[in-house]
Amino acid sequence: MTRPRLGFTFALLILIAAAFGASGGCSDNNKSGSEIPPDIQAIFDKPLYDGAIWGLRVIDQDTGEVLINLRPDYDFFIGSVRKTFTLGELLIEVGPDHTTTTPIHYQGTIGEDGVLDGDLILVATGDLTMGGRTLPNGQIAISNFDHNEANSLGNAVLTTPNPIQGYIDLAAQVAAAGITHVTGDIVIDDRLFVPFTFRNEGNFAIRPIFVNDDCVDLIIDPTDPGNLASVDWRPVSSAFGVDSILETTAA
Image 1 (cartoon, rainbow, N blue to C red):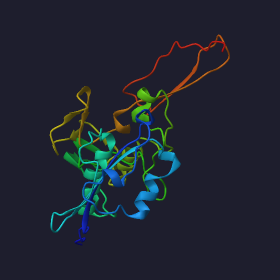
Image 2 (image 1 turned 30 degrees about the vertical axis):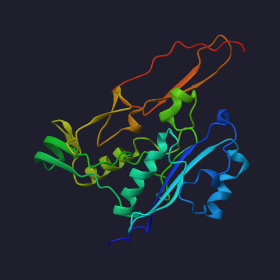
Image 3 (image 1 turned 180 degrees about the horizontal axis):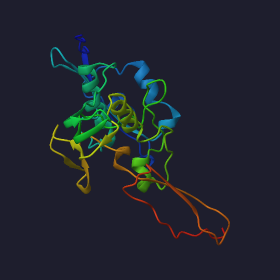
């Protein structure tokens, strides 16, 4: 199904920083001369954003005419707002009902006893959550303090779905297809695109497949003073373990 494109392209750059003081009148900084729609202006004027600095650029996609141009010369730090452009364009192209299928193939022979004498091959197709963020109603589980930011925020709120649920579901489908044991290797074909580093962090690369966003979540809780702290982690895997000598101390 072909979905119509939006009539206008909206570029909204937001920076909230109380240190900059009051943002001043938006109309005074609107270089296009067009009025900012009242419903948008009402958002700008909320007490929640007191001291914020707003930028807004609205372009007629058919003619290229700039309809609204608020603070075009301000050097905004766009940050994660850029994701709304890339993901928004993707959603326009594929539609909100799009799903990603991760196929599994095999090389070799399957005996009557269900033993695959060969390799099982999972082809990565870009499902970055692999079911680890899928709620029972099909929506994606998110939290206000995502675990990807745990090191910078000093805390996180973990989502409830099992981070390896997608792999569990695939394993169940393999078993339902009659394969109960694999004598060879389980191979992941990740050639969908060339991996690239994220934020110039050499230890974190974007690949076409993930396990728990490439994170190991440590859940650490205090116990009685003098005793070892309670330490748990996810996902649980035979590939690694966690040893902790962290002790609980008195406040």
